[in-house]
Every structure is written in structure tokens, then in C-alpha cells.
Image (cartoon, rainbow, N blue to C red; front, side):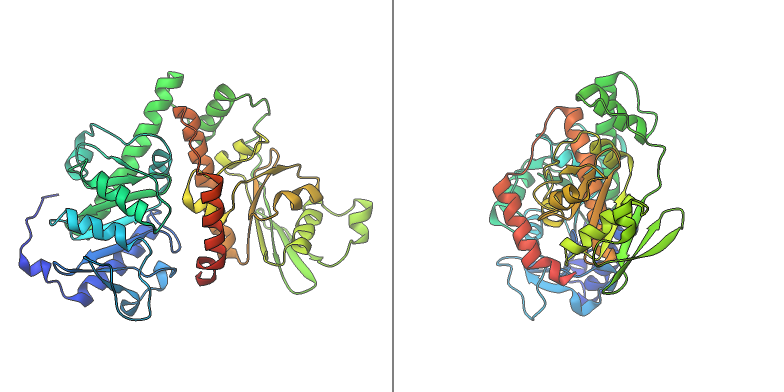
Length: 412
């Protein structure tokens, strides 16, 4: 990819063109798994004084040009009722520090998020990464989402590199370049670089490469913790459910079998043990939580592995604290009362040795919890591998959870 020196023609880009580029890039990032739902944000410089950015709390697949907000770089002011992303200040810092940059992407991509939770950035890049990203990727100091502290941390990190990417501690990544195509290339290469960093550490610790994801999880848990449980990666069957009215819910297995069950009261089959324990468990959760209408079981390698530890999983990433809660606790899958208690104030619970239940007010929300929980588990494994178990403070986690439930979750 050839580096281009831009003139005034680009710097005075038509605002409608800039808005369409932001929408196109956002959809492309979702399709490639670099951002999801309303997470992350995308912006494009319009001229020396303004940029346009994705709005707060709107899904990328539904965006139209009128949703994209023009923001003044100097003071972050904007017009109209649509609120720009709360991270507009971070984008402004990039545009102020880098006059050659015209496109910025903030992602929550998995492997970059793992490295963001450590105490280091990445140095001495080689190959294509050195060409497109730069020689190093610094780690910006942690700050709560949308705060001046986060913006200041990014501003400082920008002075520490001449490259095109920054890791934001416990948050994700910031990728920027001359145009949307180059910024997308940076984000894609960043994920490869972070993956290589993780597997290089695995080889350093264990002296070999992981054979597959299951092998990676088993090595980390068995050799770096006191986990004595047998991790069963062979059983993939999961039980999912959704409310199907005021008085019933539909329970289905991943093999396609499904059955309707009554929602109210304790059925005779629950009492005599002829009802599947999964039906009893899901019923009890629905009875206790009116805000939950969909329950999905997740048995991916990282989630299944950490469910064997029987230890609370604490937030190492902001979106974990926001969507799931201040921790994920573990309960025995055959103890419905304990599972309900473990879910209090949360949207996920580990079933000991059987993965986790991820809950939401609809299927989209439950899927989001799944994505965030899996990323949180991958991040936890990474922190074990690097011997750097940094978590977000309880106070900051509670604050993010409160703001999310009171404000942002209502928009999605």
C-alpha cells in the first residue's frame, strides 16, 4: 500500500461522502468481527476544523447518513439532537496530533483487547506490520469510557509513537490512517500482530505451539493454575431458551430438539425429577428475573475452561463490566437456587464444568453477553499466560455497570 501525501482537495471532502465512508467502514468492520453492535466508533475528517463520527448507541447495520454527526475538532461541539459517540474526544486528539490522518477507527477486537489488559504495548514490529502500523504500538493509560482521563491517555500515547495504532488499556484499540482502506488495513494487521504476540508468549512458557484452541486453554489452565477438573471439550450440546408468552418458555438444544414448558409455579415433573434439570434451571431464572427473556448456554473452549476453575471472573475489559456486571460467579448446574443467586445483578453465570449461561432481554442482548464473556475469558487466559492479572477496580466497574443499565442499554 503506497503512502499518499494529501492536498486540500481531500481535506475539504464533501460531508455526505465522508458520512457514507464512515457507514461503509462500520459495516465492513462488523462483517470482519473487529467491532459489533454499537461498540467501537468510526470517524472521518471533513476539513481542518471538523470531522464526522458514528452516533452514540446505534447499531452499525442500521446507520444512515443523517445519523452520522459532524463534530468540531477544537471544542467537540456539534449541532442537532443526535449525540455523537462518547469517544469523540479520543478521535479529536488523533486529528489534532496527526494532520496526515483522515480516518480513525476504535475497535474492541479480541486479541488486541487481550494485550490491552496487560502492562505493556508492543514494540519492534517487522514486515507488513512495520510498514502499515509502524515500529511500535504504545499502551495508553486507563481512563473510564468517554472521560477526560481516557482522552489524555491517548494524547500522551500519540507522542510516544509515529505509528498508526494505539492500545487503550482495558478497552480496545485505536487505528488511524490516511483513508478508510488504510485504517482498515491497520486494524486487520493489529489483530494478527497481537495474536502473534500471544502465541509467541505461549511458546516461551511451554516450549511449543498450541495445537488448537482447546489445547491452548488446557495448557494455560492445567499448567498455570491449580485446576484439577477435567475439561470436557467434546460435549458441545447446549440448552437455550426464550420466553414464549406470559405463561411458558421454549427450551431447545443445539441439535434441534425443542419443547415448550410452563413458566409459572413448580410443575409436577419438576417435583418428581422427570423434567430435565435444564428446564427447571431456566424456569427459576425467568421467575426471578423479569428483565431476562432469552438464555443462551456457551461452551466455547475459553468459557468451558474457566467454568472449571469455580472462581469469580472479574472485569479486565470495560465492555465486560458494562454488559455482564462486576463479576461472573460459578454455581453447580443442578442447583437452580444457587444459579439464580449467582446471577443477581449480573447477566452471566458459570455452570461448573459446563460453560456459562448468558442472559438478555432479547436474543441480540444475550448474544452480546456471549461475545463479551468469551472475550473476557480469552483475556483472562492471556493474563495468566503473561503473568499479569490486572483487573478494573470494583468502584469503576460498578460505575460503568450503572451508567450502562440506566443509559446506554435503553438505546440498543
